[in-house]
Figure 1: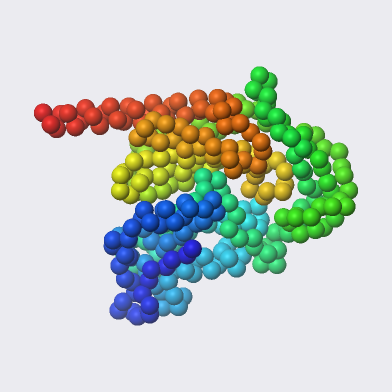
Figure 2: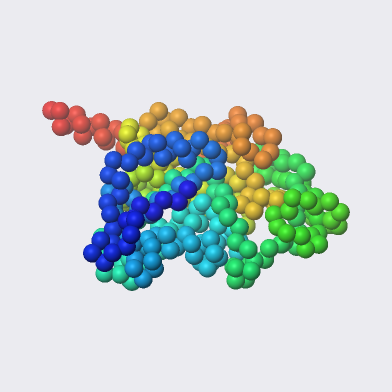
Length: 321
């Protein structure tokens, strides 16, 4: 869902209107979170104005999603062809304020805002090869995991693969019958490496909390050629309670461009409770086993929030006294 809350017409004397002052962000959040693959992109944050442009003929913000979906913004494209929930949100949050600052006389601020359903990045749109310069619409090889093994004693996640050579079929491939089979090595990654990257992204969240005042939702992401970790820092609009959601995907099969989901997790700060979910996993994994392996990654951020609570309690006591 895309919402540009600008004026219904553009006039030099009236280039903006106030965003809905009493919008119910919880309703938006509940709507988006009612599905694993829903996202809502708004042209500005709460309390800001959404500006139009006589030169562009519509809202400034609207100009950029149109460019993205036409394949004219390679900086918003992942893997040369995919517009994802994360890539679009990151692109819009940077390009719109930059454009207003550099190309207009507007003195107000306009920072796009998004509500995204899943802690994992998901594909919104695939840009066609004709529109996106340098993109391929097929891959040379496809790898299909036969089974996934988490070997904790030897610090390894192993996927035994079946390899197929593509004959030029469109990607993503929904039919790979008749393709030539090739020899491949198993996919391997160190559990300790994945845990280390999870710790790093949680450290980024702590650093962010110490440096910035924030509202609503902030996205953090770490990725290389073998894994993708996406984390969301979310504050409830009414209760002001904070939740950290994090998902891990391994880039194994080639069937899923953004990676194969291993687990999703959610840390409820108010109740000091970590929940790890494997119901959306692409593999048959036990939640208890995954929790035992990865729960220690959250130790530092848990201690951070507990310390913050103690400090807040001491300050309130001093105020009462």
